[in-house]
Amino acid sequence: MCYAGYMGKGGAKPKGKVKVRWSPRFAYAIGLMVTDGNLSPDGRHINFTSKDLELIRLFQESLSIKVHIGRKGNGSSKEKPYFVTQFGDVLFYRFLMDIGLMPNKSKSIGEIKVPSKYFFDFLRGSFDGDGCTYSYFDPRWRSSFMFYTSFVSASPLHIRWLRKEIFQSIGIRGHVTMDGRHITQQLKYAKADSLKLLRKMYYTRNVVCLSRKRLKIEKMLAIVGERL
Image 1 (cartoon, rainbow, N blue to C red):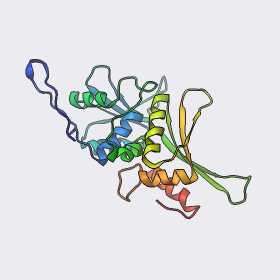
Image 2 (image 1 turned 120 degrees about the vertical axis):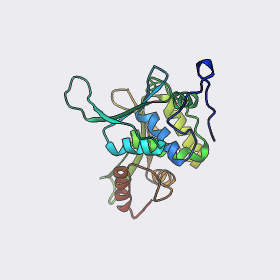
Image 3 (image 1 turned 180 degrees about the vertical axis):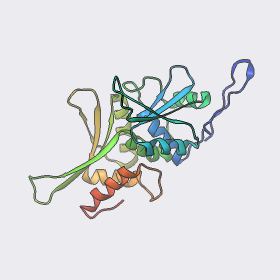
Image 4 (image 1 turned 30 degrees about the horizontal axis):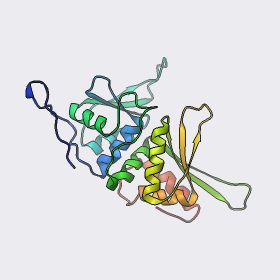
């Protein structure tokens, strides 16, 4: 699927840095954009911020771009714990708007128009951005090891859409909880459903992904004799 270009003022055709064509890597980058990316109100600039340098590099590699990676802080602190990359691309910006992203998206984002063929690549990007796995031994039962896969968003609309798409794809429902401050919702899948979901997200050994999260998952599954 290619994306048609836009004509600028006076018929001039703007040039884009990003080749807009759906693929596993491209869908992964869109998942990252939904969680940790930002569209500037100027209608042109795309920003991606993370504390994880590997994630910044994966974002650039997945879009086949190479631009400056800077550092930035948070609030009044002099420390700069975040890595950030920003670039201007009118065509890519408009494409992102067309599929469901927007400036100041955190609480209002809903459905993202991702081809079903690439949904789990998109979901893996979303997971690497704002998802997590966690596990523990439940003291109520002997040798009961519990593990969960979760996705977090400040937008209930987006959480509902994710839950619907996952259910329609692989038939697992999960459940939704609210954080203690009532700011974000968490979509969670436990044990058998979590394993089913993780195997769809990591469907081959060479899918693009954040290495530390994959390693954590592999160690977690090894405890119950499972693997991706």
